[in-house]
Length: 222
Image 1 (tube, one colour):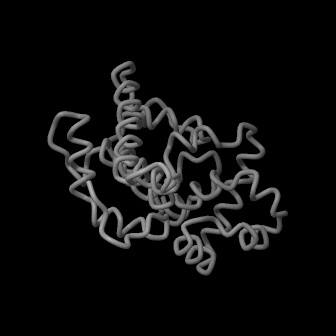
Image 2 (image 1 turned 120 degrees about the vertical axis):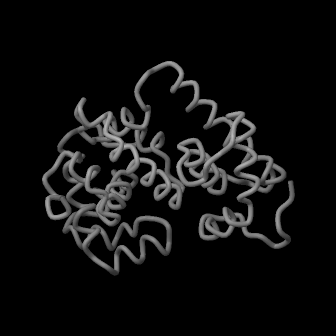
């Protein structure tokens, strides 16, 4: 496993890294799952992309070869996911979304359209080095804090300059977002991961995910 000479291992170069090492990603996922991998539809591949982004974010040259490190991270995340899936009948991702502040009813848990949105959402999150697992860990626990964060995300998603900066830098422009929402930078920093994740839902206009966020801020896309 070798890198292209001079290749940058950093989030800003994430898309190029993925394109250059697609065969490595497919081979790694297939090695864990023991089956053919569909790049477009497999949830396991989406998890691998998120794990790859995590590896890029955490990589230290002193750890040795990057692809060796990335393979270990991907295999670890996939094995955790497969272990969870085998121990419960429902999709773990739906339960994780509930933990993050999304109120998903029993009826909608089996909705194929919602599941497809979640797969697309995972792929969008990996561009920022985020996973649903990380969001579950970092989501605000208090409902008022969560509502404030969603309001901030909604406001930021409607400002083209803020959206452009967010996607270009692959992170939330905290000062810019605070100014738009008329809150302190401390408030934004406290929930920055959740705000970014909710902002992505609004920007990409995922109607089912918007609907089940605990607020009435997405009625215009339904």
